[in-house]
Image (cartoon, rainbow, N blue to C red; front, side, top):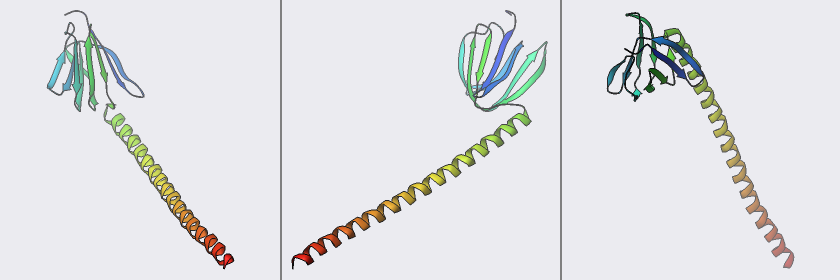
Length: 145
């Protein structure tokens, strides 16, 4: 073995984990993958599952990873994922994401309602313009007779 692995796990908003490890086990599309120091370069797609970190011959840390990308090169393991953490962190992040999604839906509904109101106002204006045009025409024709 060539030393230790340098592991870092990142979500869009921050770095979740940065540490040294002797072995990292992740769940890839092809199945579980164990990464030891000296591992060949590798880029893989992760599926939702547990990332396990071993040091000194024992499991020291595990966290849930919601898919993403894994890159291994020169004893560096980098995980990019939309969501990662322990149970409490994942539940809190999921709650935050649900709240954000609900707010977006509410904003879209407001936007849709505003668009609908604008369409109705435009149709009414067009109808009034047509009526006004006929009224002007009738007045013009009526004035000539």
